[in-house]
Length: 290
View 1 (tube, rainbow, N blue to C red):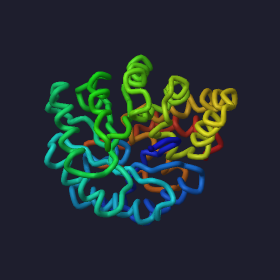
View 2: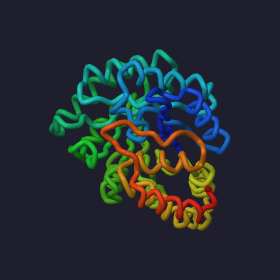
View 3: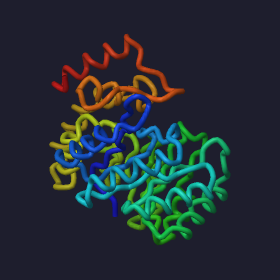
């Protein structure tokens, strides 16, 4: 249902508050450059430091600015099932096309707990839902067998698989078939995951290079694997640079260097070190981004 090059968009701040105008401009930048969908309030959108009112507001801004030109998959996950339902209900009310729900973090649920969590949210809110597995952030890995169980629920339509493991992604695809769309959650796995049957990517790199990420996915889907492969290899260096410090610090620093928005991140995240900023700027110059 949700396929192609989808951006995990940053949340720009100004004077400590949401920079609404810059966020709207970033939405336009994405749509103008071929992005197939937008995820506000994901990991890259610093959802963990937004209060509930801000979280709701960011989703509203992105939905209203996009005007149905591309689908909006709102980040609505929580480590409280009740809160996840409330945030997902709000996303539906304001017109989001789907929800991205991260595995509950910190409380480290069992596989049965994960299944019941997602099943409860799906049954409570009639909105297409995308699972989000990122054990490096949450402390829990949702196994392929659990994903396969959840794929039987009608409005669970996809998974953002961010383990970095092609083996795990392949196992999910093998177990689920066409019951669920598997999206890469790591830019460096997009091309190989699509070769295994993946449907695209929820991308960090697309924040700064949306046209190139979209072109790679489009070439792959058109059957031009060589063109897609070459873009994949070309993007590796800049994609790796997006993780020289904790995401979204590098991508926000990059957007700041490009003049797209402030590079401000909220505590406990800190600004990028001078050494890494210089390293990032050097790489960006190689891509003619600055």
